[in-house]
Image (cartoon, rainbow, N blue to C red; front, side, top):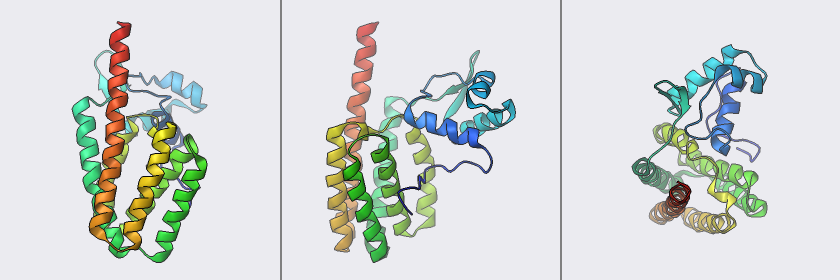
Length: 226
């Protein structure tokens, strides 16, 4: 896997509307609570209403869109408890992936992970860093060589899209994430599964804490403006 790849949620064949809407959910252009009107989306995306309708149907199957009475298809949001549960399960699954990768990863895969993390450090903040980070985590998951674990990650990856833009837009978090990756890599190279799992769990928990602070800041701003 290379950094040109973005492994998260490949679109169904031929449905570019689905992929474009996925990208908008991920970057926050299509935020939670936003109504998905077929005519407007068709005009904006430059496609007919049929692929738009299919894309909305697929997004609903992914759990990214829900139907709200009198509003229709609407971007789904996650409450505080769901965010906590999401990161808790992510820590469990990605921690397990790191432990398995310490045993199963090839030297070439470890070199690839090193290269990705170096590229992530060079990218700093912004969309490129976020994309490389996704590829890093997907490459590590592949290195675990457990298809059932990989399949279990898919619903979590979809749910993470609902949270919008990456935390790697924050300069402090971007630098810290690179350092956390390096600690995980040291454990992988030492073939220390327990340390790799602990490092990955700590990495996900750090992201969870920052996400919670962001949600609290958002809610505080809403309260102040009401």
